[in-house]
Image 1: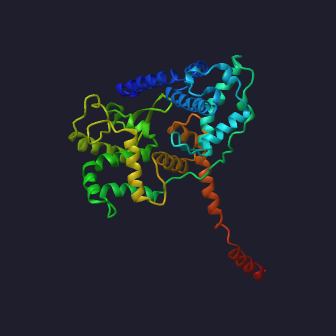
Image 2: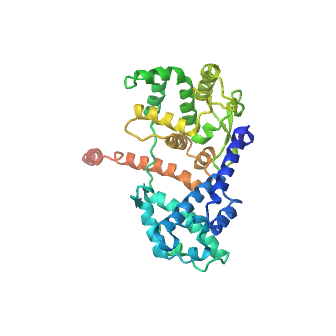
Image 3: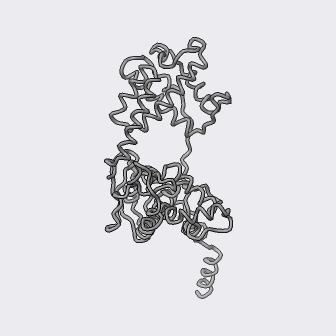
Length: 364
């Protein structure tokens, strides 16, 4: 159950194996940095850090004649120490856009800032350990990121539209889509309703097992992004669609070995993957709410904003959504405040006020 389930144990094992594979590709000094972070960071985070550092060192090999044809794991500490701020700036430009056919990529400011984080962390670590004397990343500005208060979410009408689409279909669906919907309607409705009414992440939905959900008390055990376990509660609407799914479509599918405990199954009898759930949400959203780019994370935004609107309790929203930092949740507060400001545009009508004042003035 929860983080002790076979699914999460196997997931952690596979992540550990992948991290070790990536560590074997890094220079010893970078490997030391990643291993030092293992005490405080999640394995999935360290895997991403490793990928980003491999990208940096591969950039050095590809662009520094003295490192030509060298394996990045053989890069010595003196090479890392010799890197100058101008080299870091050139790397940032490389991250922004590279048109080389072998390593084509294009990144926005937010992605560049994220990819620079492990590099800055590595240099800070090496200076602190006295392996090198200077940190060139400290002298390079990161891209300026604008705080975007415009949280994309669905209103009540759009939420009803997407759920109604799953229940009844519509004319925009192809014959093949309509036939597939008949086979997966209850499952898809259960997934969308659950996510829209609890705000769980797509990975938390993907990891649900049958014994994680208690329909007697309307609760479920989920594993948060950071690996911690949490209990959430849901209402009658979620209870009804989950029960309907379990009594119908879930019963007709024979699970593949190793997937017997998964709550949501694909038509092939396997646990619904993160990608499959994401594609499912995007498919229905594109048909029901074409004016907005809706992803599973936008379902969280929809729920978080609605919950804050109803309760006015920002800490409750942070707790239910599993935000470790309440500043993340404040974005929902900012979104509601923006709505209030828009309402203020029509709150005062001076033409009407003037007429009332004139009537009082004339009487006096």
